[in-house]
Image: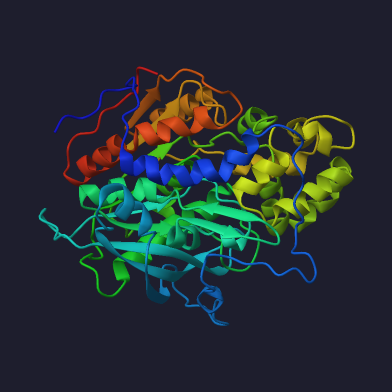
Length: 458
């Protein structure tokens, strides 16, 4: 098997299955492409409204017990679940080639205390024919939103979670990555992250929270009953966008937080490694409202920063925080897509400029950045040349920082044309075009194939 070349130029390769799975993401964001002003959804259901949802009520499962286990990664509970049967049945004439379980496990939250996190475990039905125990892949999802209904384990169950009063759309697009990894023979665990499905605001793009959620998902999976995994199973982490940042964080935190895991490689697609750079890039695009997720998460972990945010946010900015706190990414894009963050500040400056003027806010944002700690395993970093969410140069800087600390890193640049700047398309296309090569890269790490290294060439 040939290793990919450094800083490889890539082109899209279609797949009917991936196209069908990506349809959910497109549907979730489609309202942004309509013309005319976007109405702002209510942050809470209207009193007396009779809402409905196509997702089963799993409230009991997602409610943590009063007392959590002492050990991070301990399995709290699990139950069988069915994963979007309509997609593989309709598109390929087959069924999901894995048995699924919904899981809840103990992790460590952004504030440092024990928290319950949920997720999905996928056990392949085909036997593992490689040497040693079956390998495990942790999938760290891209941006889902901040409402509990946005948890990947909920949206993957129905494919596209639809709720009324207020309207909500949650696309189970984490299956795109999961299917490619299952095809290589990995068992897969998909984390919901802290605060999605479970109590509390999801601390969006928080480096520490995301890294712990990913590593503890792996700890839980290798201890889950009824699998062919072992404590020493070779483990990899794969993610894109927010998930790329989480995969990178897990790689950086592995040695300190979960050294017993047999981590062998990571694939970080479009990782937001520079928070201010990413904030400036999304400003005015479809994902402008995602800054509300980040601020809500910061305020949950650092309530002492509320006076600083109050100095900077106007009434519309405070309303944006309230509205986005219960939304998934589709309705946030509908409500706030293509707006400028200057609309949300007292002085009419951008939120990036406002953050720079508040040292305490700037300190927290910089703590989310990646690149200060060296992963001890080979890493693949993918970025589109014209990514309209994560700047290409910030991914290059991440690679350079890791290289300078001795990590073996491959930088892969997707040389795709800029099709629709600001509409997330230029951000999402490399995720689709490179999903299979990411999975193969990670399986090569399992088999001990020497990793390609871009260090010295970037």
